[in-house]
Image 1 (cartoon, one colour):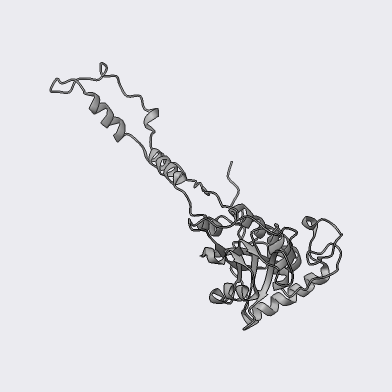
Image 2: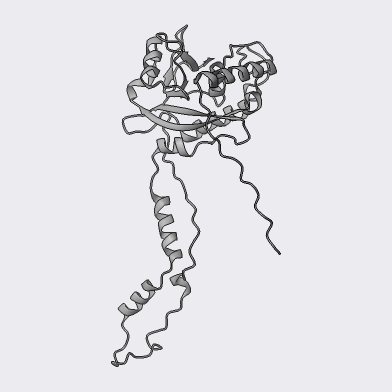
Length: 293
């Protein structure tokens, strides 16, 4: 686990997340591209009546093409607010298709009374991106969010060991890594806060999960997943699992080669006993036939 120098932290509000969709406009003729004849140029109907302004409007409306309708629908979708919890599931990184195994993350995040999560989409994205980068190299593995569940504000501050047990116990299931994002996480072994922890339910240590505080740095999830993949804290220079002062900046650290070998063995064991169930990652698109000149 990481020890924070900060004693208190503020809950960060995840702002409104907007998503855009792409569409292929149809081939209909846009009304703006059609020149409507002026009233004094239009031939009079057989009854001799002059065309009215209303008839011009109707004609323009009738000649709106499918492309205009697609654009209108696109603008409507872009204007609609997106649930931030849905964005945490759908807009975060997918598994690297080059990795041998893809594992799911079930994210449980504390929300306030208005439904805003304690951390942002950008923060969660950075956590996952860091894990993907280090685990692809060390364990030939990758991760993606498969589900997001809101947690009541009563779980915002995790103070005791019992709090940690009760946080994950009702939600635990096998096959995925459960990750809980809370406002603050107290150090149960001393004063102050910590950034994250890999926790085992004291009633059944086979049930385990990761808890992240909202003050966690971008590689905290990676460190705690290292514990999930059997690693203890280490003294390897430059290792993500080394908590000793000194050494390279944490942002530059990776897993040591000996740690990587241990993680790969742990990965095989967890797949074997059902602790983790690999997902089918998206495969890179194969190039199509070359276009004829």
